[in-house]
Amino acid sequence: MDLSVSSIITAAGKNTRMQEDQQKKDLPLKNKLLLEIQEKPVITHTIKRVLNADVDECIVVVGHFQEEIIPAINDIDDDRIKIIENQPPDVPLSQSLLNGVQNSTGKICLCAAADQPTVSTQTFTNLIDVIKSYEKPENIISVLSRIESGFLNSAEGLGMPFSCHRILLEKYLPHYSSNINPILREMIKYGVVFYGQECENELELVNINRMNDYELILDNFTD
Image (cartoon, rainbow, N blue to C red):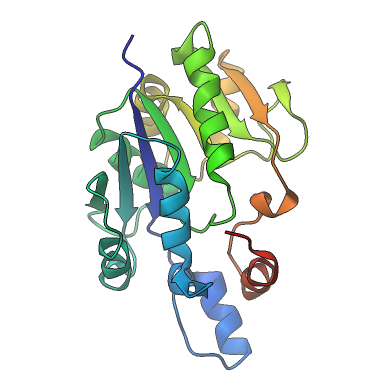
């Protein structure tokens, strides 16, 4: 069975909340994905941790601020990286993911947000391995757990990162214009199995949305 892996990293957001915080604190306006941690942009850390999970390709979906973000992606020397541009750029997260899926080749999709630089390579690997080892890989979602781990009865509060067979994304994503959680709730409603992967540490659960998220990660980040 072909269980090749495509990672899909979404890097297409509006950066609204971060920009609000920067304005309130009279800080220079800078896209959150380009803020530096240990002298490297946030997006660089995320991409490299995904690549180290032994994926076959890495699709990075860009939209808003792509003219700023693409050069940072191009600085990473790895021929597995492929940049996909949302056209138009102002689309919901579900459409960004679908664009990534439609331009990928792997049977398993590892989906992550670019503003998640603290998720470890080991956690990404664990998410993939759950799908590869399950008896029906086309009917299971492996997701970083926010509360409970193991097999789950609810998708409440869940989002990225997660891993699943591309069949599930091709089936559900075209019918939604939303964030990920409503889609995951629909999947579990119709019998898709959910497995919650325990985090290695609480920092893995932090998305960089606001300045205090960035400051927390900056103070506690380990490479």
